[in-house]
Image (cartoon, rainbow, N blue to C red; front, side, top):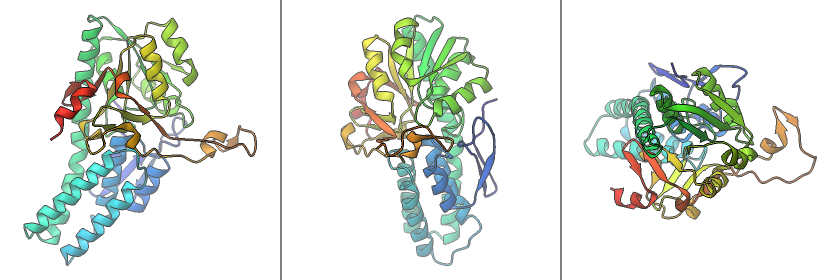
Amino acid sequence: MTLQSIKWENGKLEILDQLLLPAQSKYIEITGVKDGWTAIHRMQVRGAPAIAIVGCLSLAVEIFPKSYDKKEVLIQEIGEKLDYLVSARPTAVNINLAANELKQLMLTLSNENATPALIKEKIISRITSMLKEDIADNKAIGEHGAKEIIKNQNNKSVTILTHCNTGSLATAGYGTALGIIRSLYNNGNLEHVYCTETRPYNQGARLTAYELVHDRIPSTLICDDMVGSLMKTKNISAVVIGADRIVANGDTANKIGTYQIAILAKYHSVPFYIAAPFTTIDFSLCHGDEIKIEERPQNELTEINGVRIAAENIQCWNPSFDVTPADLISGIITEKGVFKPSELVTLKK
């Protein structure tokens, strides 16, 4: 049984506090949009799909007990709160797309002269359906990705390298890149997984390793600066990594360190795959240099668990993401299938 990072029932929302993992597994209650924004910004919940789901569910929590006499008041409140949630972590595209979808749903319902009660009901219903849809999408990603990798390895058992966390802790469940790894393992096609520590926030060491151990998947943790040596000395079949935003030409923003892994994979002739739901593709942007890259606080570099490890007064640069050019990407694995980066533009609605 995979981990459950998001719990929703009858208007109550709880999330597994990822800042405490792996030392402590503790769920915290999200009582409204302010809590949702804080949890996302502090990275108590992270991963583009999970950010979108928790953000929207925090809105559902807030409006669940309320009644509205005027639909204009309801629509304005929801719109403002969605805009606020999007600001928590601007690089991940999923929450922005979810917010736009909910705004469009409100507009449609309003034009159909729906009552405030019906608008509220429909908005909450759509938000809660995102949980089930995300898990189904992740399992489809897992199946497509496993088939793609095994096909290119002549159906042999494979060894995978992954970076950051893309599993149940980053989604509603199962995972994207880690979902592919789970599918390979469940099908008996996985020999081993290597996961990077993913400095400076250590999502690999704290979270991916936690999930791999939980599921008893054969795995090994490495430092970020060991990837080149790993590819030189071990038989790595493929790299499978997630994404926070993919633009129309296939350039992909993901956790910092992804770009250098892609370069090393190219040099060592290791296939490099991106795994993400189709909603991660942002067709409004043409090239990766248009993606806004979030910069995180300096103390994430200078401290570990509140203990300073760096020299006092040193300046820090701490971008949370980097952009991998499309020409370094072998394929983009979605719930709709596997695509070359160059094929994305043909998929735009």
